[in-house]
Amino acid sequence: MKIKTICVVGAGLMGQQLALLAAVSGFEAYCADTSPEALKKAEEFVAGWLPKQKAKGKITDEQIEHVNKSLHFVGTLEEAAKNADMVIEAAVENLAIKRSIFAQLDKIAPPHAILATNSSYLVSSKIADATARPDKVLNMHFFNPALVMKTVEVVQGPHVSDETVDAVVEVARAFGKNPARVKKEIYGFLCNRIFSVLTKEACYLLDQGIASIEDIDTAVKGAFGHPMGPFELLDMTGVDLEYNLGMERFRETGNLADRPSPSLTERFGRGDYGRKTGKGYYDYTKK
Ligand code: NAD
Image 1 (cartoon, rainbow, N blue to C red):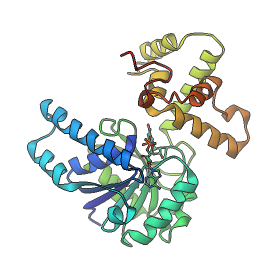
Image 2 (tube, rainbow, N blue to C red; image 1 turned 180 degrees about the vertical axis):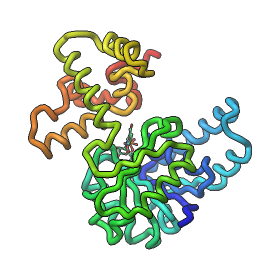
Image 3 (tube, rainbow, N blue to C red; image 1 turned 45 degrees about the horizontal axis):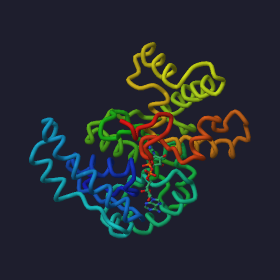
């Protein structure tokens, strides 16, 4: 199947980048959000990104022209998905919301369309049965910033056909990414499992007063060659996302060790979600 038109659901941090990535990679792209404010912000993000990339020589005039012509931000799922060959859902990390979106998409999108979720942790088998096409429902997991990061995890749950995985791997390559095939569903896939071990331990060391935020970040960067420390990364991906994931996991397992750490809970309670709110583990309002 040749994928030409891609619909992205959600125009937040990830959705706006994924829609732009699709358009800049030559696809026709539609992006839907229920929030008019999110759509406006996404349009402003695109308008700011294009000239910056042009100035750096990273995109051509033809690509800019294609994005301006082929990237559409719209207010309804109907408008966004009715002609889609593939949908990438990047709405909030909440199972009930995602299941409801997929049930709607199943009715709107053409029968051949692949329905992928960019969920950080929710495996597609929890969503696929909300549709009548489970063989075409899978996880396609990008990393933030999605316009830059090369890895995309493509996860084959037991219900997913080989054709669907092959088609999504091809789309990831067309986006200029390095797709990693994950052959079985597992909570957190590959990279978030590894990331969560690192952040959990970093939070534990902070909460115990063993070292400061700055010293933990500096030590990890210098020791392992990571470009960012665990707290810098948490601020970028979102304290709220990590908190909600921890709570969701805790509700599922009942294991106290899965609960979000005190430092994360404290910041979540204050609404300090990281870069997007100006404060998280670090204060960005002064920079
Ligand atoms: P976000 O909060 O920035 O954006 C979510 C957007 O979804 C919001 O604009 C919201 O208005 C919209 N939305 C909510 N319900 C909707 C609906 N029914 N229809 C359409 N739009 C709806 O969240 P985000 O950080 O972009 O995360 C989106 C998804 O991507 C989540 O599943 C998250 O786990 C995953 N993800 C996030 C990151 C990250 O670093 N933030 C990385 C990889 C994957």
